[in-house]
Image 1 (cartoon, one colour):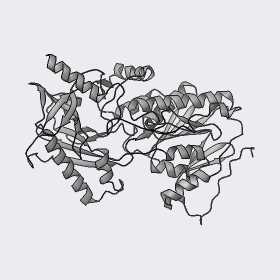
Image 2 (cartoon, rainbow, N blue to C red):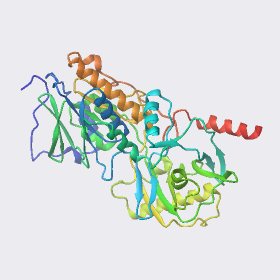
Image 3 (cartoon, rainbow, N blue to C red):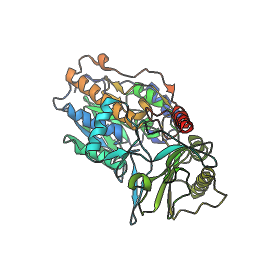
Image 4 (cartoon, rainbow, N blue to C red):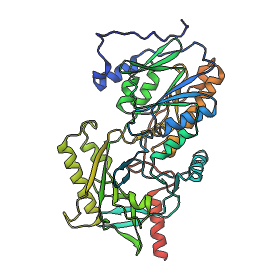
Length: 446
């Protein structure tokens, strides 16, 4: 046995699982647990376990491979990888919806390289449709075209598949919900409800929320657990709705109609976008597939367990959000035609409301790290940059042989600050108020 202070996994059928404990007791347990300190030499052929297959987790795997390090990505997705890069297709029509990330901007040169590759491969393009702010009564103020907005040509989900296509040292296991981390003999042993998932030289937590908190509650990583507990997340409802006919949306010219809008002043609605015109053009004969996203305040007021949404709550939320659409468009009450298809989803841990403002967190003593968009903000770009940063931090640590761990500690004590931005996320380079004023000035001049 090595000299590290991690303990051998123990099995005790009488022990009460921490999944049944209250949030307060989970937090207390997280903060009082003994820190794992690995001292065993790092394997000559290390493998990293990555829990979470969203943008940050996949980019972390990609950049570890660039440094010659293997990894296994564990993800809970049934339909596919990507996390908030979710695109839902309903057959047989088909109906296509981006039901989480709606678009993204680019400000960092490292992320720009990724986007350029996606563009060359025909996976992304600029979204030239009319986007702006929409207030009650149909008052629409368009945003200027700069900075460019990008969308997935066939939705957001193919971007995650593209990242994997660039790798050969990455193994993916899904659907898999890693429920336990156990340090033993210089490695991390992962399991799903008692079923072994393998052992790894280092681990990455690439998701957040209550599940990540429970996972870290007795892992031996109190510093990482403490930072994760400081994170506050919003809840947002997503309503996917398909209409046979176009909605009576405002236009900025005779042939240029609203395709996406940040909705202002309406409790139940923060964003609306026409996926059909966004993805397939205004001349498409497909049904009009809209994504409506609620405000964070509305999500909080109507929050329920997202795994089992009561039918009464679902009906109430759907009705309130469609009423919000009527108000935003300035339509008479009850005049909006009912969608022939609708699906409601609650993102219970949608977006961060605070952040430590650093790209990643890494505990070299425990050989564990965290990546995710919430560390820098709440954007696709932030997620990618976080994955890159953690991959390079882990690779540098491994290459050092782990002999001076303190030199590689990152983000274990950073304070959190409130985040500003839209309820549906942040878009680097896009400052709504300044852009709106710029657009209004331009309209006055012309």
